[in-house]
Length: 149
Image 1: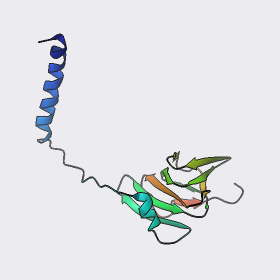
Image 2 (image 1 turned 90 degrees about the vertical axis):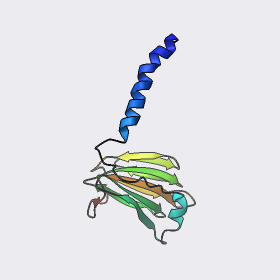
Image 3 (image 1 turned 60 degrees about the horizontal axis):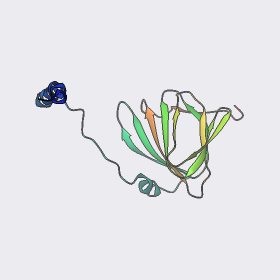
């Protein structure tokens, strides 16, 4: 056996043992994976509204909303949830207290809980975002900010 083969044999043995015992685990499966396809197309199919949304996923750990934004979202905060925003298509300005950040398709923003934020779409088409809330978004967790704050 070559020195290289000797060095990797114990690792390979451990990997095979792990695979063999994986089926015997006493830990139950968490659930089934779910695939969402063509999210920008799904957003175009949402009802006509200035801000149209659909819940893509919701469980005890997180909720995910697909949102099509045609008009500005006023400055607000979430008292319980961190919001992670991924811009799927379009462009816009993320308004944070004292800062405006231009976003385009492919950008990601992580907004800590209790952080005032808003969004204004700036492209020719509505902006489409995937917003993940951790813990899950609940009614009443969106608190509007007073003008001028």
